[in-house]
Length: 177
Image 1 (spheres, rainbow, N blue to C red):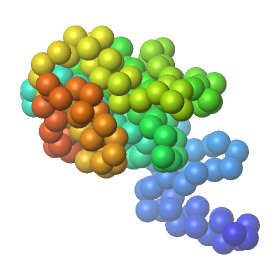
Image 2: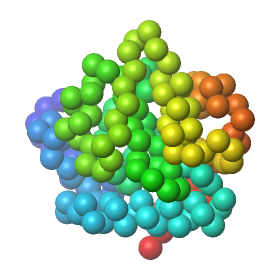
Image 3: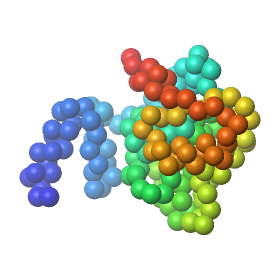
Image 4: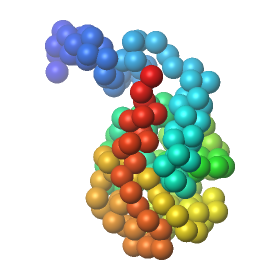
């Protein structure tokens, strides 16, 4: 794509209030202003309040708009699972492929619990273990409606004792002013 076309697209995306990936890793969108760590923390806390109101024990979010909105992490989707668990109480926990760990650690600003999985291991078992470690042995897990089915299905099989519900009401309400 030529530079002029890329600049035009970036300006169009910014004007629409969306985000555009920058080759140098800078952020665009959100009014072209950096979102502070305090703002991301406030967004997570608002989501937690809404989780309590909706009787959810945790949220499972993978790469996409919800991940960037709540954590500032922008990660492209691939066949390999990269996700965050936001528990109702306790530290966030991240799941990423082992070979991506150093990159993930550079991007992640909230939560030091970063769990990796090797190519011959199941990321879904890792996520199920996070639920256990956060005390979620029964209850409801809110699933981002954009979570790809193969991830949802894998987690559901590993932690079949939990109930999984669409978390869009929580996520959309958390984004509302």
